[in-house]
Length: 355
Image (tube, rainbow, N blue to C red; front, side):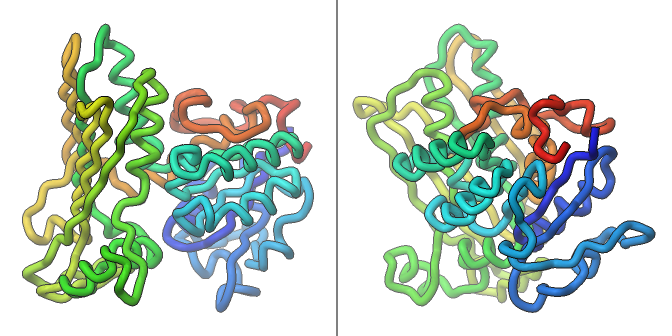
């Protein structure tokens, strides 16, 4: 069998990390990289940590130049967070007859907020005989799939708390902007009200995680709320892609709640900031479930968000290639697991696009 052929669209912090991870694996080749601006015409190896060595060069081009019909088994799309932003890009890839895995947070469970676009993506994927999946560390694993896995050992579930205290430092410029890193407290609240000069999103994915959990165990949610507050820093903090001067915003504390008939069933708690260790904040992941039996999972420090997102996207490549055509989620595919041998051993030959 031919090696698994992978293309990457968006060679930033996440896409570049995926390239580095793929180059360590057996049975897989990177056959194209798409991006924009100053990266066009340059070597992929100019933007990643892995030296080229004796490998064939990969020159970065536009999506139209790189992504040709049936030219790869899967494209890893690492550009935007929102379904509406990535929809035309996913549509373009699917229409080339290629599977898609995207790190766009809303794509982890797109029907939660964009049911019509989710249905359209499902239709396009089926029409072209391929599949699409959105995943990452969160949403995609820590605050949703991991919660569902724990409920598998329970007779009854009464209430769920999913908490992640994490560092934003591994993430790229798009996340820094969405989180308002470096802006003033006053600008934060202006943007929160939709009046500021930029986009402020905080964590993207609570609606998707809650939708996945609720659908997974059979709860019907009739109300969803979320809120965010700034995390201000007393000292200058600098991460690879962000800077927060003393007195400015270093992160966002997000909370979310899901209700049925006025009763809160699911709580999400997610404070995240750049360089939390610098000010003595201990990161960690927590799943607390009231029911029979009760669950109280603690993992500290946190699972690294950057490495985790990179690995989730790469490790789900066999599952999305092997999947039935259509829109997939972490609920519909086999559970993620590391790829420690030749990736081709995990691929159904009849499902491979590049023979």
